[in-house]
Length: 129
Image (cartoon, rainbow, N blue to C red; front, side, top):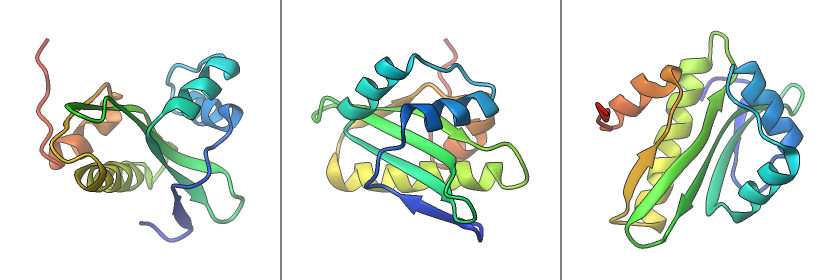
């Protein structure tokens, strides 16, 4: 983890903070009420916070049937010199959590292009379709 950032897994970010991050990453934003419901119904999540200002710098959330499948959503990290490191930390840590809490689940993810390298480093295969 680069200096100046910290992982947070207990507190869910606000829909507004997550939409701000998604927007800065050129990803689709969502209506706050729907995003709040999605965050509430997620099985787990990880945030990366900037220690200088407390702002959301990275995020990923997980939904699962708790049996066979787990899905990663909203993978994002602030553009800039630490983006690839932040994405790698998010993906590595969330996969570690899933191995413990949901062993045997198949993990799928719809990811932005910027996250592909970090996912491949963790053993993900690209779906050609």
